[in-house]
Length: 290
Length: 293
Ligand SMILES: Nc1ncnc2c1ncn2[C@@H]1O[C@H](COP(=O)(O)OP(=O)(O)OP(=O)(O)O)[C@@H](O)[C@H]1O
Ligand SMILES: [Mg+2]
Image 1 (tube, rainbow over the protein chains, first blue to last red):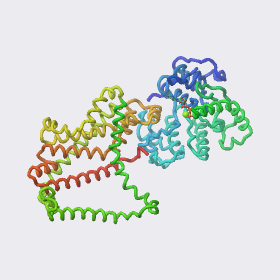
Image 2: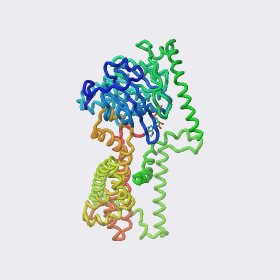
Image 3: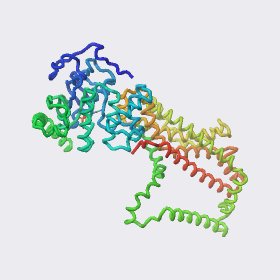
Image 4: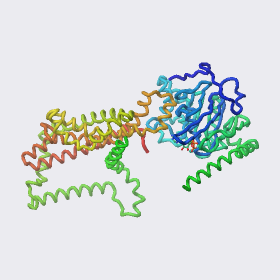
């Protein structure tokens, strides 16, 4: 297992400035989409998308359903090659799997034949870590996500929220510099969700990963992020606006939603989004009518 | 490719009865709600008693029909003599060498069939080109009534254990092969992508994702595989052998001893039931993380 791709190695390719990239003129961003387009046959899912995630930054992408959010994340993970454009990880053009990134999938991704502990340490096992040490670390991480004592459970013996926690531990135990999260909490009930969001923020504050977080819940995006990027409705999705979230940290995701600044930001962003959401809605109606 | 998957469907349908047979014991739990609408089901003890009574009634009817000469004894045998034959086989110990032979043949056929089915299923499942190349041949071999290979195996491997095992292997192989092939093809793509993100190389993907995923399919077909191995062994013996329960029946038939034929059939049936029970026990120990919901 190589965690390779050291930032100082290789040529640093700076893209045409996008958004407030100039603020990051110093060190290269953790993740940079440089005029990325993705086509599936004749269908253009993503068209000329440029965005970046600074080192240690928490960035959310919000967009109407089906617009291409997961596609963007797959590109960042190196699971999908863009039809055009480039992905740079710490200034280096990405080839193959993004070894610096951990990916929390939208769907359940735990191995059903492995226990929680065994799932958590899968990445360490791949890296050849000694079993005892891996298990010790695995138990530590289970405790960190509030699952100590549940290590011997199989995925089908756990609730959806517990499975997400295991997946989170599984991703973070490898200590990736970048964490990609695809609507990780959308399947959870509201209470569990708030709980997990707070835990995520705590973990993020402790470990300072660069996070690219996907959601179609605007409130979730605002309460977690440093920056929120709005995508246009598909096809030919691309970022249409971005907002810096200047809410103070540390935050409590439930409480912060009551603050005036949050409400203000919410309205501001929602105004920018409304048009796109309506577009997506209309297209769906048309699709249903056909 | 599409042809192989078409075969898979057929196979799944064949495999189904054994699956439903296994879920049946769980059914009583759902019974209380039905009680109000349908006729009350008797308790398990009463049910067993009724089943035993039915069995006794059938035997008595058989006995009565034969004794009253309504049915010719020559063709239908006599339950008392059949019973005596079974007892004498066990008392003299004559049956044990035959039982052991059939058991060994069944186990060998099962193990070799499962191993080859897993190996080739993985290989073809992971290599679409090879699978496409072999597709028509696999289709043909699967469609062929493979029991007719028995005589050829006897020519190739002689009258000993080898020809029976070979026949059993050809039967078991396809059950396992199609299950593994399907298991590999239908590996959850999210689990696969997740493992790649966690840093798995090709070999690790094989050992930690493809194989466990395919094995869960193999487990689901254990009953059928063992059954096939047993069929292969017995049919092989029946086609020509010097030992085994199938041989006992063959010998009895040659001397027109219909009572011994019936006795052999009963012994085989009990044998098959015991094997199935053993599989159920093994299954309970092996299947820990329930793979499919
Ligand atoms: N492998 C593929 N082949 C063809 N089309 C695809 C493929 N993957 C995605 N698409 C299409 O690309 C578009 C974007 O898909 P994507 O999964 O990225 O949407 P999303 O924004 O993540 O949606 P959701 O919010 O529902 O998760 C969709 O219209 C989808 O049909
Ligand atoms: Mg998605």
